[in-house]
Image 1 (cartoon, rainbow, N blue to C red):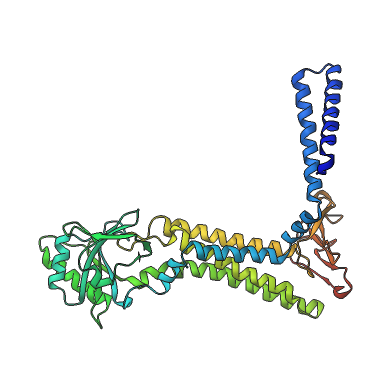
Image 2: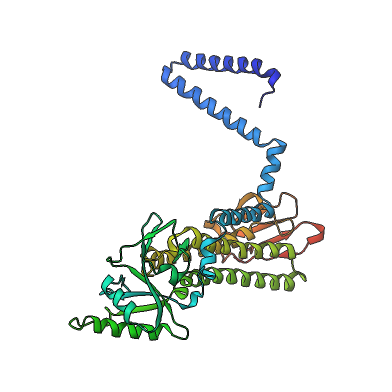
Length: 406
């Protein structure tokens, strides 16, 4: 804060003041450690004053004003979207859900065996897989595969003919390297249906073949083969979390429609820029949340057989619902505290009254626009009948008042 040419003289004067202050404290009978503590308190207070003066510089003041503008808010969200696109390699997982990178992907199915726990899926024994390959009439190909947590995949020789060239992403799991699998191990199975064959028909045939292969084992309904389309399974997270985020977006857009209708009824026109900003937030924030879920979370993680992991379904759905609720709350709170003319966040909060006297007088907070466009009064309680909350325009071009809902 001190100019360069006067810095040495200022430093000497400041050090001498500190020494004089320390001498006064010692002569007052304070011990050395208390004197040191008082000097440090004096120093930190000086640094806080210096920081406040530094923030009052024109460049810093302009930067602080820029943080309150709607352009900064929307620009931050846009930069976040670009970062998501760049960090995910061009939305790899989202594109794999919408358009699976396999030839004629609608004919691909995942095959597993059920377990004692409802919804459980187990791998197929190697001998049963070979029996299916030799005797089925509904599949044009069957192949086994597995992977590990490090991105290494193992597949049988038929995998390339069933799925196509070794894909870099399979069941939304990124695979760095494919290696030959041991055909004697139990593997997860992927198959390709013959043209015109449905998954239900193939499932019935594989169950009959499994019963013929092991006639001495009484198969229960839970232990039987399960066939499910690969495309439908990989798109399930897209629809599940897409519906939640889309519902949030539609709820906010409905609130914008109600607000615009209220504008037209009360002041005879719609504040176009004000509600355009609200609609932009309503669309961009849920979209950002959805992309983060799909690309960087475990909400799209599957087991080898296509089952959902423990984190993917029961826990993460509630977390996403809470995140959507936070988006709704922030959008409304941020919109209420912005100027109706310039859309900058309102400043200079002043508390009026107290909750203890709300029955006889009003209590709340008043915020002002730094540009002088108007003031906003937010009552402390929704039942304040003395003075309702609302926007009071002070600009000649926007002199009408608007009541802001709580």
